[in-house]
Image (cartoon, rainbow, N blue to C red; front, side, top):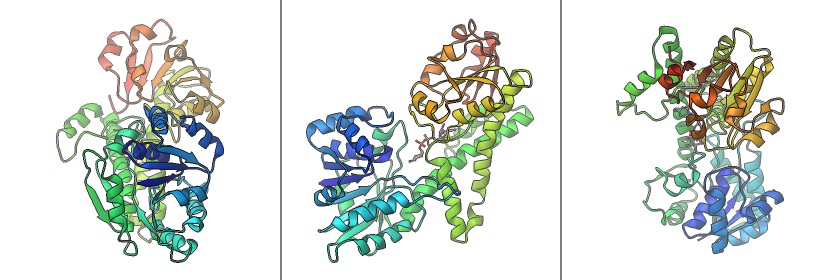
Length: 438
Ligand code: UDX
């Protein structure tokens, strides 16, 4: 099939490369000519394991191309996937839909023959119906452009795997465009193993995405709330979480207590969802998400508090090593990163903060130029009064007390992800503090 993918950010670039990999002819579309030039050379503007190689390989097969022309895209595609961003608006929690509107407005006038426009972006419920109307108003009369919704659940760091082997596919099909279902089934027919394909109306499909992310955020904040109780009662949240995980109704995934969630999805999605529920007059139903957000942000304060205690009560002038800047390992994404937030707060308190991250250094330097950046994790710990592990990169977990003891001023470590072996560090004479652990 001939597909276009509009918006070649994280989601779009992955979707385009994966759809080419399963045999479709794909044209990636973006308004940014620099990005198009980089993609044509096989370079994506972010770090995702395997993605640059897949893009390069698929360009080589001739099945993947890129353009900045909507006219060319409209002439080429039978199916147009819209993958543009829906960031948080500057004036509050609501989603900014301007890129989505702009994409539909740019594409629609060129659609001179029947096609399916498929939204993949994360949107407030009700957006798809509005865009369907916008599309039919702007497309040439009688051309037959229809709209469907197909939310994306991929995780950073596992983007290719999640796209090629998704847990499920969700197809939002409006009553005005019932033919969208068979088109989407055909698009995804090459996936092996074949995922469950769930067909539903447009608003339900939109809700699946935001409710999934809200559930995941709630699960993380639940265990982080338990961590607060553990801290107050002398209990250990890692053992608590382990014991909970054996109940198959609960399950162990997303039950790791630590410095909390960040990234481009979970924080913004729970805020946008609340804003939308308020608009719909059901704000009370999602009131708990305020607490989910608040618990999450309190964990960052807790790390600042622990670091302050460990350096003797005042961070000013103290050397603090921060391991991690990305919001999670195997990513260079620093959006709403707990690690970078904690580093910035400690710097604001006068600490001499030295940050190291295997992939996110350039992004971190641009956003937080006031921080010092080290060339490796041991260099970051040079002269440190305390070391903070805030993003659980494998490279950090492989370090031992023997690597660090010779360089630090005081042997003290905060395990912000409960990812280190406490006994090893304590046996080597280190002061160890985990989150939610007595
Ligand atoms: C998330 C959803 O998982 C994905 O389905 C959706 O499409 C986009 O948003 P992503 O943002 O890539 O994906 O990251 P994810 O792996 O979900 O982690 C989110 C955050 O939660 C990270 O900061 C991570 O460190 C944190 N987290 C995760 C925890 O603090 N504890 C956990 O147990 C799990």
